[in-house]
Image (cartoon, rainbow, N blue to C red; front, top):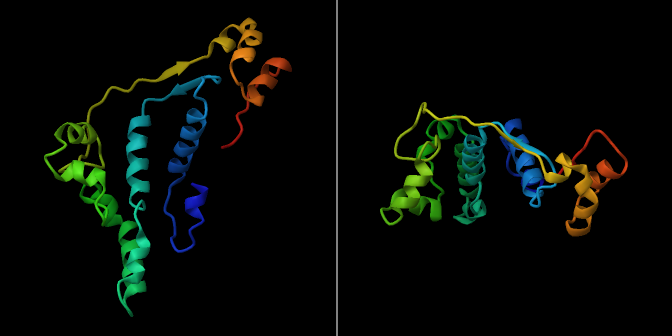
Length: 184
């Protein structure tokens, strides 16, 4: 995210919720050996759909617009960026397609990938033939605690077999009550 935001030509319109969710994914993704307690609130799939749609608008080579011809290149590039960030683009999210079509556009626009398309558009506000305004779903919150947190006596055995973060080691070796994860 920080790398993307360093591109000076584009004013990024990422809401704090997107940044928070990406931070959450970074922490969970980095914990592949389940060394930290974790939980979900039931909205993560909808958040993921929104983040994918928001970030994907920029996942294309926008610099080709700068080389289309003399005199119009900056205007066309800036116009395209404005359209990506427009309220109209957000309101008609299901109509958005990358200029240079990728695999997702092929899934959405052809009959070749019907099973994938069905799975992509099911209860997804951002992809599909029509705009979805509301939908029913069952929200399920979950939590999970690794064995070494439930049974601290396992920690010495685990630390010999699993690479634990320094925060987890400090938690068990110093008797700290609070476990702080390092920012990604």
